[in-house]
Image (cartoon, rainbow, N blue to C red; front, side, top):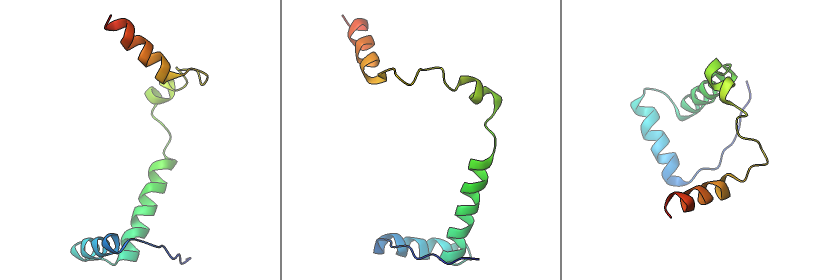
Length: 76
């Protein structure tokens, strides 16, 4: 197991201390569980519906300009 040092704002550290204590664990164990949870979530394959929808909008489309153009035409 590895050790990591993280700089946090004092108020964030105090929050983590109170929260983890209420959960009956330490700040380190709480953060380790959160990291494991995030890794597991990101390693899951995307549902078929999401995979099917990905790539629908071409990467060269200026979505902001398209949206503003649409809104201008809509509200003329």
